[in-house]
Image (cartoon, rainbow, N blue to C red; front, side):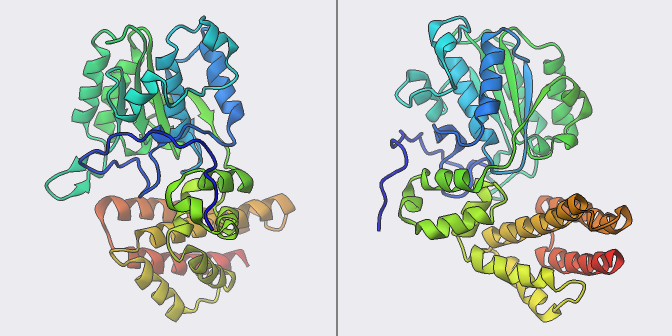
Length: 370
């Protein structure tokens, strides 16, 4: 049965000719989200810094993928462009960063038509019909040229980088030159899933704002509030996906968009059997998530394994169940898996081999920890 939408329907932006690398499948783009769940403290940090005249000109908004970092970045950019005077009554009386979808600035941002707001992300390669694997230096230079000119509307010039891990060294160094000597009333917002991987000189010139994973309740509310197909989903399925999401709306959507919940059960069974490995089932898992149309399942499997390793290390450490020498093997697998998964995605390597290698390493780690 259909449910009433969780929020007022929002105007949608103009659909671009090429896919956006910072949009998750059919979900609304972060610039289209006018509600923010679970991050009122971070929102207040930005608001108070702005109206008190101590706003850093470069911020790194860090945290797990899919928890609302980009939504917060677009929300803050929208607020600054709608209220360019930090001493105005609207800013002084504000309790959050909300701007109505009907505001002229909000409408222009939705259609990517605001000349003082730039977004730096992996662009679409028309030749091979895929996104580039990194943010190219030429794209950064196009953004930098805007900052070298006066703001078109006399207010702020803002760049959102989504995500910082996609910057190659040349691109990061090009941005660094601008961040070191920023023009007045300019702002850089770096969305980062792993802030430690950002160029150290950029980190040292930026203020870090770390967001925590969402509660299960906030994940469920965020999913239900997306509109479209999610309005009509079974609330029980949404709650189940939220419970397995690790606080990430993106991971909840992965689970809901495929046989993700069933897949989680299969992965749980394989992981709990370690150090023994049912290689027939592991091979079938690797085959299934490696199919061309199984990207959502592949990403869901990655997230489930990351969470299992992380939970095992965290809970054991908190309860004193493992010594450091026993935790180390799992930490090593975690680091190796993160590195190998990034290389697999970047260079379009064999996903099947990644999964098989991972279970080999996990079985060895479990034997060492025992």
